[in-house]
Image 1 (tube, rainbow, N blue to C red):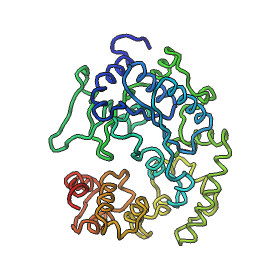
Image 2 (image 1 turned 90 degrees about the horizontal axis):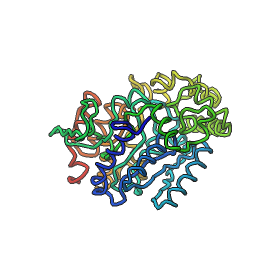
Image 3 (image 1 turned 45 degrees about the horizontal axis):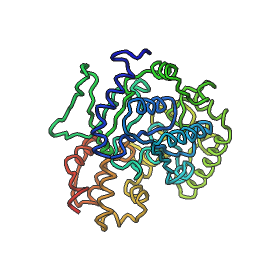
Image 4 (image 1 turned 135 degrees about the vertical axis):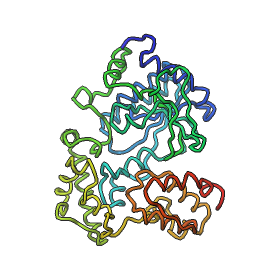
Length: 386
């Protein structure tokens, strides 16, 4: 990569400088750089410093990141502090092992409650800042379709759509509706390839985590269901104590399921069997009958449905009755429902029952898109009416 006009790095720097005023409008600290200190977020941080824009760094502690990455991140944060930047390490509310005990099932590709609790939940440290992430379209098909350089919740009724002034390509939309959490995000690396990342790191002498030299191509939570089986097996060979902890937790989950009368299927009657199925790419790719039964719902409703209101009450630390009787708690519950990801993990009839319970309004959702439309059209439910 050369530093020439329209090179990816030059375009990223221009984008960050152009929107700095907007970032400062929302938070005097500037952009919030959400970083794991993997290769992409390392490049993102370097671009921020090179652009000379105001920013600070935020890292979500998961408890299941590779030890070498943890040490690398700590050293980098100290270096950022030495340069005068603010840094925040955000501790999880519940550990991965606690979450699995609560959910009674390990995280799956289609049921990734871990990301929601460990990385994506709004935290006080971020304030109202525009979040800056190292996500790239080329990392996955989903990101190629959905992620853009700047994402912002817009007014769907007005059809807001803004193109940045130095962008002359129709495909490079900048503003994108981001309904699930109503956050503003800037993704300077949205159109970068792996080659761009490594070329830039080499050109500017940017040190990356030593695990890449050992053959790892991605650094994230150990055992992440988004990784293929080969990658997860590589991780468990490298860090066997994490595999042992997963197995222990699987054993506890089996005990919990039996005590509660939840189904324990033949393929998962021991921790080892469950672990083997969990590693299987088929289990990771799509929700199959075993996942649905373990999670607690099925299309034919022969299994006891997962309880939407139960889960919301647990998240807020209240009784279900408080969701309806306490105005502030009701607002919070409706806000959680409005911004919830992966709504499909709860049957449509449960969404209808939950809305009726909280608001007294009888609704019918023909599909999951109707749920989103309902909350978009009734934003006052979460803000004014209670």
